Length: 271
Image (cartoon, rainbow, N blue to C red; front, side, top):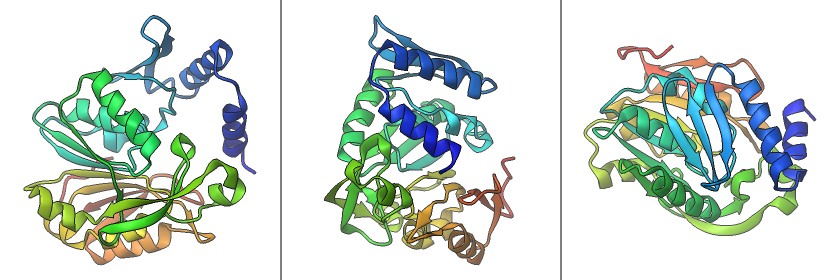
């Protein structure tokens, strides 16, 4: 078991209260000093206040890992852009992106876990943003209904990942709606789509297969967290599929389950 899994289990084992809040605040400020200006629990408001060094303020009823906020791809988003957040969790990345793209841009965030949906919607209201649309569904190759392993903020998935195998008691098996991005393209009639962040716990390839037309016609930049699915990394098949559509794919981190950044060669590269 790696150090991240050890810390994750330790974190979930801690009881809620001042000690946990102090440790979380201190730990994140130290780990992400270059990204965060502050990370603190405001007792009077009953929520966390997080301020990034690029000037974005986020409020959350739960503490959250701010690691994604340090990604150059997210930090390079600009006013007026349209973006998708696939695997929205409790909404902090979507809200950060909403601030970056401003009132003239828009964020569509897809989240199938019902517990996360409720918290995500509460965070949209808490932060007072009006340019975020919550879509209460997962993303798959085709639209319909699928079996889903619901784990809330612990992670949720349509496939049996290593997290589910190691901690089956954390998950509830249920059925949820799924949509294909090509169907969503038709529904929303997007004229442009600039960026897609994807963190969907092993369903990456299925989601991309359902987005062939969208990726071919709109050519958004992609930021994809790869995972383990059926005992192997999804990185290879994700990379091969995107290359077949004319994308250049780079590994943001060289690790077992790398983060991939993909862009069409004719587009501006986000470094």
